[in-house]
Amino acid sequence: MKKFVVRRLGYSLLSLFLLSLIIFFFVRVTGDPTVLLVEPGASKADLDAIREQFGLDRPLVVQYWHFISSLLRGDFGQSFYYRMPVLDLYLSRLPNSLLLAVAAMTLSLLIGIPTGIIAAVRVNRWWDSAGKIFSLLGLSLPSFWVGLVMILFFSVYLGWLPSSGSGTVLHIIMPAFALGWYFAAAHMRLTRSSMLEVLGSEYVKLARLKGLPEALVITKHAFKNALIPVLTLAGINLVIMVNVAVVVEMVFAWPGVGRLLYEGIAFRDFPVVQAIVLLNGAMIVIVSLLVDILYAVIDPRIRYGR
Amino acid sequence: MNGSRAATLTTGWRFAALRIGDFPLIPTAILVGLALLAIFANVITPYDPEVGTLGDRFRPPFWQAGGSEAHLLGTDHLGRDVLARLIFGARVSIVVGFTAVIFAGVVGTALGILSGYLGGWVDQVIMRITDTWLALPALTFAIFLAAIVGPSQWNVVMILGAVYWTRYARVIRGEVLSLRERDFVRLAIVAGCSKRTIMKNHILPNVLNSAVVLGTLMLGVVVVTEAALSFLGIGVPPPKPAWGLMLADGKKGLMAGYWWLTVLPGCCIMLMVLSANLLGDWLRVKLDPQLRQL
Image (cartoon, rainbow over all chains, first blue to last red; front, side):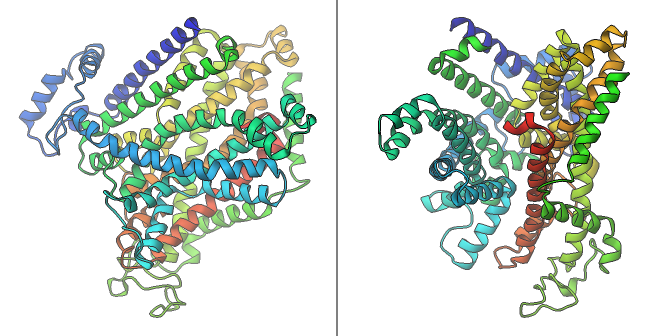
């Protein structure tokens, strides 16, 4: 177990290192980074000052050292637009993003798990086909379009829900649904296949042979075990939701990290864009590390398998 | 060289077998139809998709009050014909989608083969980079790259290729790992073929099926990502008629109830993505049993 954790931790650190390297590399390889790091419309003197400060005329290794050491000190630079440290800005928006992600996740699990179970129990019947169509639609419709169409119906035509902003429960319904829609389809697919696998296993057959009613076999024996991979995926998806929320947050003017990223692009506020990509990437690396370790604790086979 | 002949034969046979059985006719018809629209866009529509008449702003589709047969699906906030923009939008989506998928496919397949066949430190380096790349959320990464290089149609292609090559590299590497233990590859080694020849003539033809399947499945993902980037204003730049851009424009008229500016481009995206996914699913089962789990 210890060996597994150490090795997995090593991979994660390597991933974080490569992540910073990739970001660093792309900023410098695609043109003069000074232009990106300086406010739009800066003077020649400002440009030179920035070049001096970041040592952009020095060797890349030295530059990278500067970059990574300031990151490790928690210094992600200053936002041009908000005139404050990017990290503070990010942390002030993160709770909103997490709130939206949790709401969307709850919705997607409430839709995905029951439909997935029914599709598995009634496999190859009409309910299963309906589920297949639903999951295909879910995976094919862009979330921001779902959001726009919902605004059209529930805000413009019916006037039931506010079209943008945040604050009340009513505000979160549409963004959560638009964001959770895709994931509901993904969770349904996984619940179905995981449930099918469990239903075919020996202990479920035994439970049936014992004469247990089918409802009990499904709820008590199959359901619990089928849920493990779904919840693992949900853990990682929660972080992914924070990331893909950018378009949904923009559609509904939801004040989360995604909207901050959008503003960063719109105002050419490059330090904000760079910091969000780095922090979100780091979040995914860390969460998948935690999920893997948790999985190894639950299922000893994984510890030795790799 | 015998090995490679046998390999191409199998590939050829498998492609021939495609014609039999439950061919997904409607998705293919939709994709072919969109491709035809894209090719003959100039002939089909009399309107310029980028220039409108300001006097004809926000006209509804012809069946609604105020609409006319002159603009079958209405006009947008600049008085541009929506139908013309949708048809030319198919061109943008297809050009961007296909070139990005091919670009990502070539890079990913090449690196996957190198990684799987050469093994050792090459494999380690490529796979660690792939892992990190996959850890980066695709959309955020694409936004980051777009923010650096600025909006342009070909930049979008490069960005999508740069973001999505890892999907191919992973799968292809896995296939190569099992292929290189097969007899025909061993015989080629005994016959004195160079590593380069083996990878090119013996391995590559055998992984092409998987690459094609993945490519079809990636087409949907790529089209949606392109639409999202254009929607955010960092993809295909205006006034080009990209579906994502049309949605961004449509958002301006949304609160006024101009539904056709939002609903119609979205339906086009959905049709294309849905068709690509259905075709990809079918190809996966037909061409490549190993990918059925995907």
